[in-house]
Amino acid sequence: MRDTLPDIGSFVALGDSFTEGLGDPYPGGAGHRGWADRFAERLAAGPTTQVTGRIVALTSDHTAHNLPYGASKGALDRIVVAAAVELAGSGIRANVINPGPIDTGWMDAPIRAAGVAQTPAGRLGTPNDTADLVRFLMSDAGGWINGQVLYSNGGFKTPS
Image 1 (cartoon, rainbow, N blue to C red):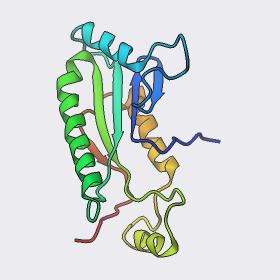
Image 2 (image 1 turned 60 degrees about the vertical axis):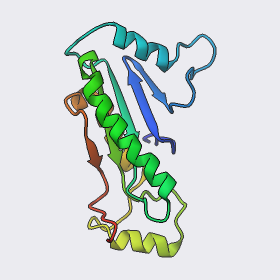
Image 3 (image 1 turned 120 degrees about the vertical axis):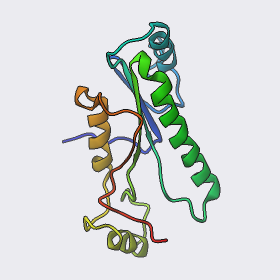
Image 4 (image 1 turned 90 degrees about the vertical axis):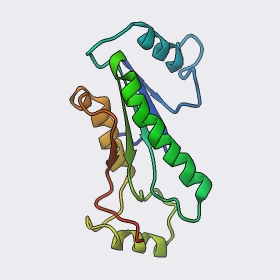
């Protein structure tokens, strides 16, 4: 059975580590060097054409009636796209995923029905849908993708 990713905003992979969440600088407990230290080492190593790390952030188009949330996601999008340009020479790839509405249990029946009706794929997204794209971006096969805001939403469109 596939593992699903937790409900957090960003993922960082540097070399052989996969670190979930940017809030804990030293995941894994005492003795484990944190992602921030490894990130600094990658930058100090100088230019490379090899992919040495990845940043994947999750965003949202759900901005109406929630301006602070929408503003923070808009800023996140721009920061990650800028980081893709500025960090590319150090081998770090940075992308954003907009997964659309993901059915994690928070929706009531009317919200769920409206989301399905606005999705050409005929269903809402699942955590595994998002996890599959994150896994691809973190893999060697995803190393050429950089500086993108990727829509992985079954064609979902918020009505104007």
